[in-house]
Image (cartoon, rainbow, N blue to C red; front, side, top):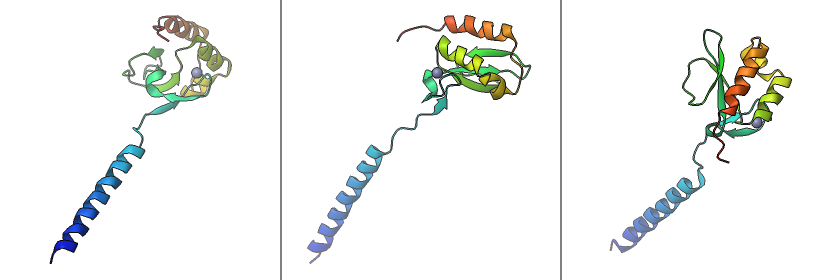
Length: 117
Ligand SMILES: [Zn+2]
């Protein structure tokens, strides 16, 4: 007598499992995206270099993304650094002056980026 009910339940549970699978499949893995100050493209944070202004006001490239301070992001590409410099993007991001030696220091650090594609 309970045959129909049990079929309903198995139907529901298979429907539920299908729905669950579908949800898992369609929800993309959350990748934190950041905008490059140079080319203005949104890219995964992992692919960008963090530029950080420390509480003491020192600006440097933060390859590990761990330095304290205010951060901005750049592609590991000297062209993006140049564009950011031209557009005064870092000055705006940090609301601070960026002396020439800071930019040349960043350019030097940019050269140290490992180029593996
Ligand atoms: Zn860029």
